[in-house]
Structures are given as C-alpha cells and as structure tokens.
Amino acid sequence: MQQVDSELIDRAKSGEETALAALIARMMPAIRRGAARYTAPGLDFEDAVQEGLIGLFDAVRSYDGSNGTPFVAYAAACIAHGQQDAARSATRKKHAPLNTSVPLPEDSVTPGPEELAIAGEAVDDVIRRMETRLSSFERGALLCAIDGHSTAETAQILGRDAKAVENALARARRKLRGAP
Image (tube, rainbow, N blue to C red):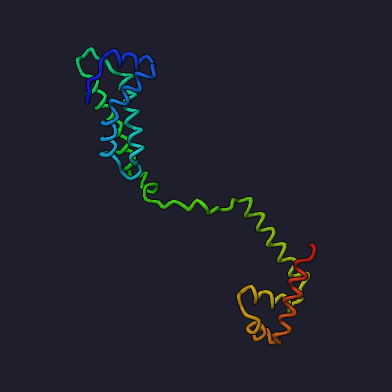
C-alpha cells in the first residue's frame, strides 16, 4: 500500500472532496480485504465495505501525526476495528431471528386491519342476503356447491333430483347478483 503524505491528510481533514477521494482510492484495497474477512450472517460484503469506509472517515478526522504513527497504519487499524465491531454486532444472539429468517415474497400482500374489516363486512352482507333471499333448498344447494360437491352429489345429499339442484343454484346466483 502506498504511503500517504501529510498534505493530503490535512486537505482531507479540511473537507476537500478530491483529497478524500484520493485517500479512499488508496485505502480501498485494504477496506475490501477486510470486508471479505469480516462478512458474517447479518453483515454482507457491501455492508462490511461501508463499515470500512466509516472507519477510514474516523481515521481522517482523528489522526494526529505528532506521535510518529504513519497514517496508513492508523487508518488500517481504524478500518479493521470498524469492520470487526460490525461483524461482532451482526452475529450477536439478539440478531439471530433476523439472520436466520426467510423473507416473505415481494408479491404477497398481507391485508391490514382495515382491509380485513371491510372484507368481513362484505362476507357478513353476503351471508345476510343468503339468509333473507334464498329458500332453504337454494341455500343448501349453494353451500354444497361451495364445499366442492358436484350436482349429482348435492342431489344425493339433499334428497332431490339433479335438475332441481341445477335450477336452485341458478335461482340462488340470480338472487345474490341482484341489487342489495
């Protein structure tokens, strides 16, 4: 890894974007190596790279060259500590449910309480219309059809002719499609 001169560090500390970009470019190989080493369940490679960049920013902000420590060594330690802390945090037991859970498919939409209440009201309305508009024979034929019974099975269950069951289902559909 290349040495970094103190002028570049001072310019980066003062907020100069080109100097900071140059530091990032010089330190990125170390950041990526550390990210590959510290990936864990709950901390993927890109997240570890981000933690390394945060460590580099902390190193730029807090570096003091008066003690003789080279910036590259100091920054490498800050990067590694940031990535280690992130890996340690991600693998804590309290994060286990997040790390081992299976995500729900994107296309499945779970209805909220409002939608469930509206659907419940619609079902109640249909049941009320079935009770008030349909005869007991029509209601029985419709419930058998909803349960998946064929016309012949429904006729046998209700003790009626198959043609009578077909007619009862047609009347029930007509009555339930009508205006509330």
